[in-house]
Amino acid sequence: MGILNVTPDSFSDGGRFAAADDAFHRCIVDVAGNAIAHRFYCSISERQRRMMADAARSESSRLAALVDEHDELATAIGARDLTRFEAALVGHLESTYRVTIG
Image 1 (cartoon, rainbow, N blue to C red):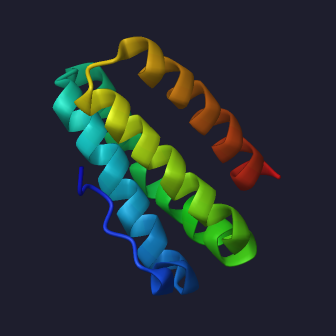
Image 2: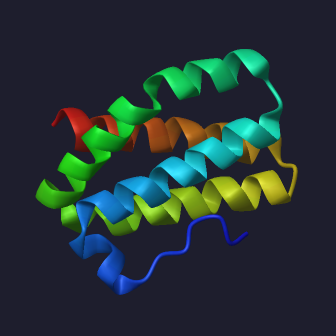
């Protein structure tokens, strides 16, 4: 889908990874066209970016899995497969929670 352009060196810079992560999530929210979700995401975006930058520095081994999860989400959206998207989203939220909260 080309939303998240990741190279091996993306994982060495937590800020760059967090910016790419933010761009992915912002794109998903924007494409959904839900004004409430858009306002909510904008209100948490900076906090999420800081948390992901910290996680990227301390849990870099987990970042490749997060990228794979983003790919699965994008693939489900592209296929218009709501069941697949919902399952991928739940898995992504759970794993992201483990990375950011510990």
